[in-house]
Length: 210
Image (cartoon, rainbow, N blue to C red; front, side, top):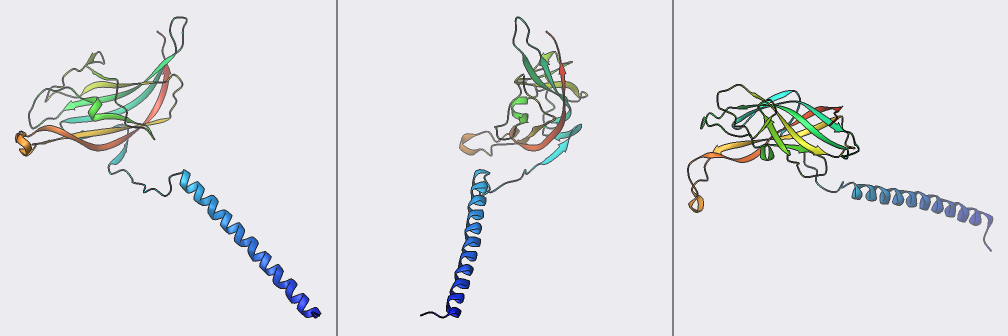
């Protein structure tokens, strides 16, 4: 027959085992919950930061053969009418200057390659158009040596779009050759767009009627 001391020791041991078992169960549950959170937030993946500077507008930077100034961004909403649905667009005010010291040639600003809207979780978005010359002409050449032109890049957005801040990627071409590979020309030219900077712009909103 077990003594009273043996019974007491067994009860104490059982309580210790249960207490530690509870702690281990809580610890394992916490680890599983943390693993699930990390998995769904992409925490196991390598996060790579931007390799270019992020600048706040208004700002001006030299990017290849252009000097690009980014000033304001405005969401322009057009309310629904009896004859047309509601619509909206995002307009970004730019100051563009041709600084092509290599060729001194007049050239259009290729907004689809050199200026894009940065939307988290999506591919870079090209502008629908870039207008210069008092915002009336699409594709107006920028002449080397002349002052900067007031231009606007337009992006179509949904009527419900809202944003206090937007970001835009600025790219810069380089003036170099193809090094004669596979019969390519050895003469240098403007190409090979590469990221130059991201410009962060405070966004305002306005309404217009048709």
